[in-house]
Length: 190
Image: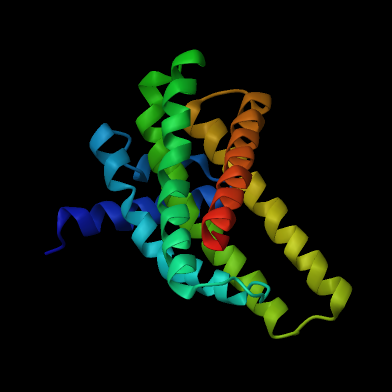
């Protein structure tokens, strides 16, 4: 017998992978309730090892005190998961999408697992120099474009909004992500 939390996670991931293939019926597997939205933050724990691997694949540099860097990265990671839903809570009122906001949070969080897998695949291919320079760069760009499309599709379908508004949602997430990356780097460097 599977626990409700494990079943909810399995359904959330299955729904995310359906969304990743352009199938909006993946939303039917994702718990659209407020409890489901809160439960979808379990994806944060599932994505954490992938995030660590991605950070280790990143460019090396003198980052300073390893404890400070670790704490900054941990704070930045958690902020990255919660800041955007908090921003969207306010925007959902403005957009008159409060009734579907929990569904959006659930879909957004579960599709983060797909995002991490795509970035890990592209990053591993790049780190192992499997593809020559330009082809490796093209793969990285294709991975980023795919992730942008996935987030746009998830926002459009989960919030039931036009594509241009979904693009604005993705843009807001990108801007907030850039801000949080800068904040994390500032904290890491002291």
